[in-house]
Length: 253
Image (cartoon, rainbow, N blue to C red; front, side, top):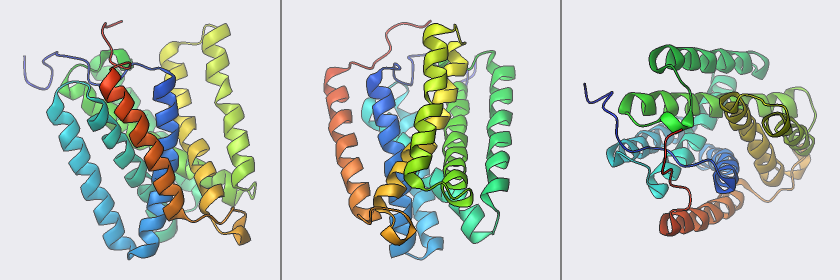
């Protein structure tokens, strides 16, 4: 058995309320941080910085060999920043409209899921116990962040619904997998990834609504302060999980 497929401890957290709260916060933080960096830096070095931090965080995460709260959520946060930049580069840098980039990222995510399923025979978060499975997992996570960013901007900007109305819309959409899983026997893996994708445009729309200038429909708080506020809450919650271990998976299902 190669090192890529050798099974070991689970490398991702249990799906609890903490998981969804921090995931939502990380999407908002990633959106605000990306907006801040591309304003204070030239877009090219900003994207390069985002890529370096993204790769560095994944290197740290893979080196753990098991779930460690701070390294896992650091990787998620850096994916949040870089995933936002990927979507924005296509739109702002290359002129690709959100109506085109959204389905493009959806197809990309589908390709990742199909490849993952054919290779590992499962997409369950309770099965991430090898290097190869974790690689598929993070590829899916990056694709969901890029897709969610494009979908959020498509809704808020291209369709002119505004940031907060878009947030309300996605808050309603995210109830579909929750209700389906709880009362309609929706497949738990499908419900999980459905909700995972939708948290991105929900968080991004909220962050944009708080940080963008009032002239474009935001509250005008600024991307920097919004990013710092979300980052602080994430750090506090992750510190708690690091000490308590409440989200460590103990059994495979």
